[in-house]
Length: 281
Image: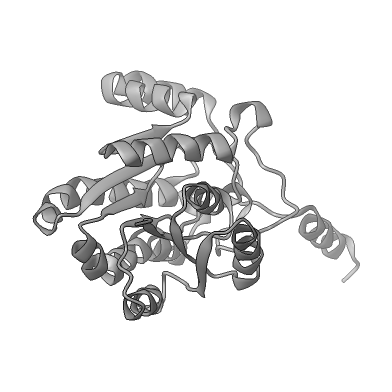
């Protein structure tokens, strides 16, 4: 019998590529994201290759939207074997330029949205004695300047994963934490309100970014092995190793060399702002 895999944030990046990889493996897919049009395009592609896919417009910050997708599965007699709590984004900027609302918005998606996903899939995962995969970040091990909101949220995800391994073990649910480094995705082109700025350049140079297909294959292999944590990308592994064993060195290097990333803005948006600033009052 094929696996049933639920993926939040499935309309782009790691979530989208996970859907493709599991479709190749014959899994039944339950795909959730806010952008239904993107999900529909992905579903059409996967169904053309024979995959069984259901799509659901769902925002993890809204109570019950993940639960509705789970309810539809269970009504069809399908339980979830594998859940990827993948939806998230990153707030950028130094603390003096941010407001409390920015931190709340960051935690609402990356922490409470992840918790909603867990609570709303828990009964189904327990019935199948399945596995929960929490997508964190290397930023959950090392906090950099101009990334306090994002790093705080991902440190929280890592702490949650550590606790859940004991909490969910009696229910027969395994827990895996995924900590990616720089992977090709939309996250660095998404602004502080969670809106994709499609024309914004990725601030991470191409030579440092790992292709999503390569990263996802590594994730899936680790999940199949039942790994407690999967640190993705070579540079990510090095950073996490140094953070664990040489924290003072990592702190000094970051403070000396890293200046953080600005909030992404599209070229068109920058041009509009410049035009307004140059216009006479």
